Amino acid sequence: MNCHMLIVEDSAQIREACYDFFVRESGGHFIIDLAEDGIKGLRMALENEYDIVILDIMLPGASGYEICRALRNKGSCPIIFLTALGTEDSILKGYELGGDEYVVKPFSLKVLYAKCLAILNRTKGGEGKKDMDQVVGSIRIDPVKMQVWAEGETVDLPPKEYFLLKALMDNPGVVLSRDALLDRVWGRDYVGIDRVVDNHIKNLRRSLGKSGSQIRTVFGCGYKITGN
Image (tube, rainbow, N blue to C red):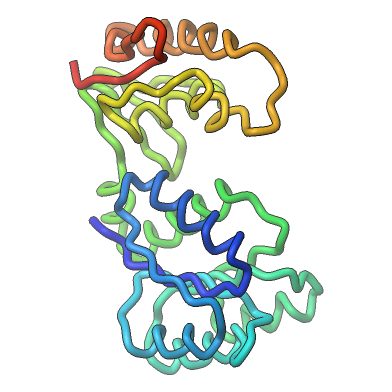
């Protein structure tokens, strides 16, 4: 299943960050249109059919509130407000106009992504979540609930090991260096030794049991996950 999304946001940094994160985390299942102002966003919202829309409120040309009104007159497409307006009145107005979620900046990309998946799961009657599950060999991930199965059995993973596994499963067969995994899981501001990745990979393999053999070490390069 592909999800057709519209992001209307006048900050290029936020637009690009959301685009990159959603495409990467969904394995390419999110097809995303971008609009940098309210006029373009309103036109795109009315001319296209979207599965979900993310709206800033304070936009040049037309506000997110105006776009929300137009979308609600058109249909029931889910809407998430993403804005710096965090007052009670602003939040209540967003919900009164028909917004499904209201996220105040600064925000977490992981939380915003999880909210989108949860809304899609509700609006698509569970079909969206099922189709967005990731499977490599005998390992399956539900990115909405952050659950993992190996050989059909539930596996409980600490957050760091879950996100290591997620990073590898987003790129099946591709070798990811320790530095790439550090950036993805610990963040670009991490200060420490890269061998921390090795320790968590060791624990991850142990937790996955037989399926842990799917995580291969590529000496001198990093790690990759294979289907067998």
